[in-house]
Amino acid sequence: MNVNQILEQEIKDSELSLSRTQEESTYKRDLKKRIELINWVLENMKNPDVEICSVLESRMDEIIIKIKKTDSIFELDHLDSELRILNWIIYQVCKMRPKEENLANLAYRL
Image 1 (cartoon, rainbow, N blue to C red):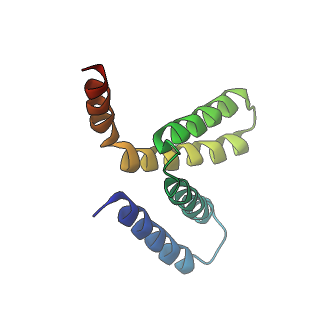
Image 2 (image 1 turned 120 degrees about the vertical axis):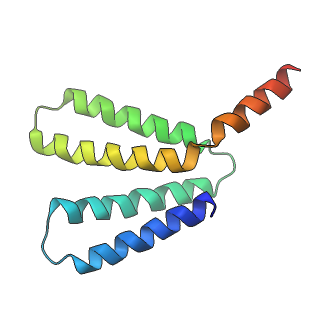
């Protein structure tokens, strides 16, 4: 299973869970955010000029900065959820990238 298939399957699973959840809750909000973020990543991955791992890291850095600036526990909860979702996505998308980048850097140096 490649990364796109893993992410697409996660969207299907999240949509299925979302359809089964009737009441508004934090869980339902997180499912919606998960679907939104995965779609955003898949869209960015279509562009070969986009360094998706760098884009994800940048977005995570922005969220961390917002977390440090907020005084609201409600906003903090929302940002923390988004950060956890992005953490899972970056693991799925970028877990093999360092090896590829290291090989490219090594080839460039030679």
